Image 1 (tube, each protein chain N blue to C red):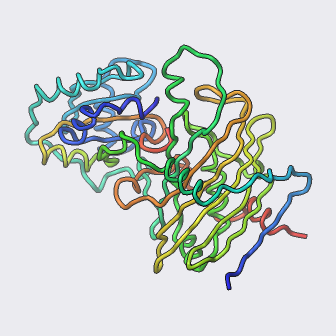
Image 2: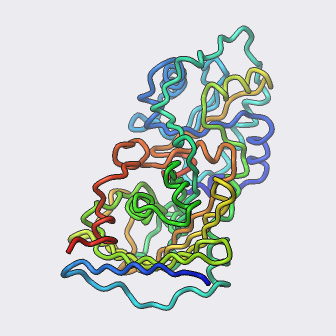
Image 3: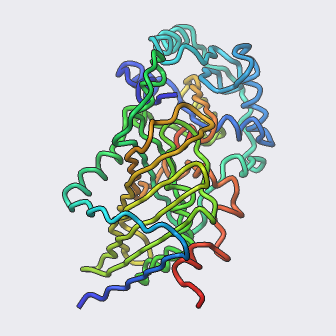
Length: 77
Length: 311
């Protein structure tokens, strides 16, 4: 039998959370997949270590392309 | 910038995949990085004369740091990137006798690694519904539908808790404070401990999985609010996490922002979490990992007070 552990806390004077319906399993799966789906820019084999980049460029005789943004270019930017 | 529209051309993407070694660091961190890697990075970017106000953008260089092309505009890209890549390839001559960077002198602070024995989760955020002010700025309209990406670290101790069937308070707080944010149009601030107003969380073991349901109310005085519903399914295999599928969604509003534009009134924000595949994705640090004492700390947390009130 599955055991459920319920934790309920309401901080004094706080606003109650919205009692909106939970997303159905199908909607959960669909929305989750939609958000996690890789975009085209993520199909490039981006590297994050400059030494590894340099070694690869020398071995493969290729130029280096740098895409540099504030924050994390491949993450939160 | 909008990553999706900037890198949408298939020919450009194929060039980047096959004819270049493509590198995507944090310009902020690499400009500060100590050691030979930082020196090489600064050598490259300092050869680009414009714009003067930022080193963000694109560079093409040789392995010994000679700049071949450097640009930041136009935004969005109008074909400039493909043209520059092809021009470089036509004239490229690989240099000889290049001294490789000394691995022993790499500045780990500039590229922090995940905690040993832990796990990495990919985080993706999107505004599902939002109302916006009228604008003629194409860059702004493009970025409104963008997906914000980040990574979340899970420590070894938190993995071990999940293997035993429980969700550590420290992981709950990290997820909420640093990742229940709208980062779709730029870098958003983390929530402070005092912003956690209410937390309801139910974890249910079911067929070898851990099902998670709950809700969170977050509020910054006079600014952001986020009422969130949480659903998730976590699984472990042996001593490791094999699945971390979680969705947080709800109504979000804010009155001030340091970047971009703000939707009018309330929006519907959704954030998905999924285990990162082994490889380069795991090496991308979470935005707030540069504050390890804050991001990974495991004691005196606000969520502990909310989950286990002292009477």
